[in-house]
Length: 134
Image (cartoon, rainbow, N blue to C red; front, side, top):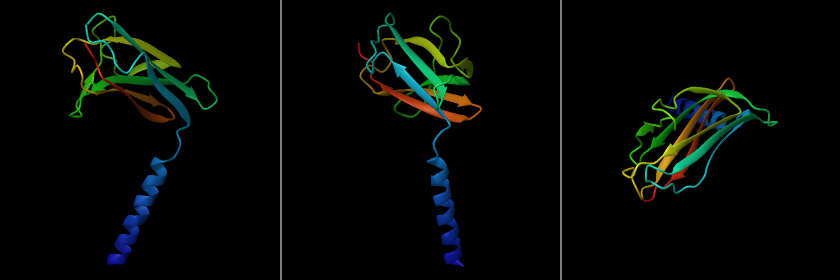
């Protein structure tokens, strides 16, 4: 009985890892100007999320942007030009915006700038490590 349970658990674990390792049917990338933005509340830090199929054709999707601190807490990011949050925003192909890093934004600490992209073909979580400086 124990052997059967062990074999079932092993089979489930192998199946789950094979599913997790399956390639996505799309390509999503997150790029930015630098990994060390200036934290002065004046310098614009542009970033972009690009979403295409495997042939390079733009895909429609939704994007959410957050900054994840070292404790794992996600803080939503606001649009550059207003106070709305970049949360579940529809786009096709390329989404561009910018961030102003305030002086009290963990200068010298590595943060993860995270973009979560959801499409009809799946989901991708993109991480861009940043270390703000004064």
